Amino acid sequence: MLIAWTTVATARDAARLARGAIQARLAACVQIDGPMVSFYRWKDRVEQAVEHRLTFKLLPKNAVALEAWVRAHHPYDTSEWVVLRATRVSEKYLSWAKTASTPAPSKKA
Image 1 (tube, rainbow, N blue to C red):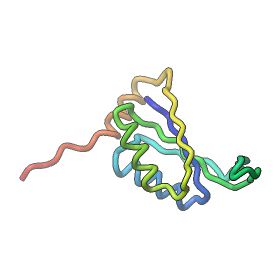
Image 2: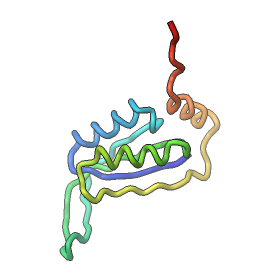
Image 3: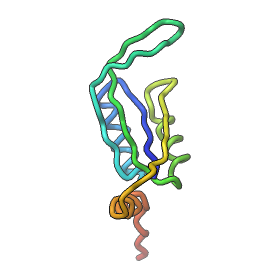
């Protein structure tokens, strides 16, 4: 299992990205934290902004597709995208994540 993060300026954008990633079955779960304050350097100035952090829980098979999806739908030009591998995940949670991240079989008429 992988854990990925990005940040956005508004709760509305955070919810839009979270819901979309779940609907597309690219992540098993997305949590939203915030608002929080971020400090960073941008165009040689120290900036401060209120942001919301999204934490995505995903399967490795969806990593490339989720990153592309987030980049395509993210409101920032230069968005944060950090991915780490979970070193330990409970069997039950991983089983649930696999089910939640796999498209349902299509029903043939």
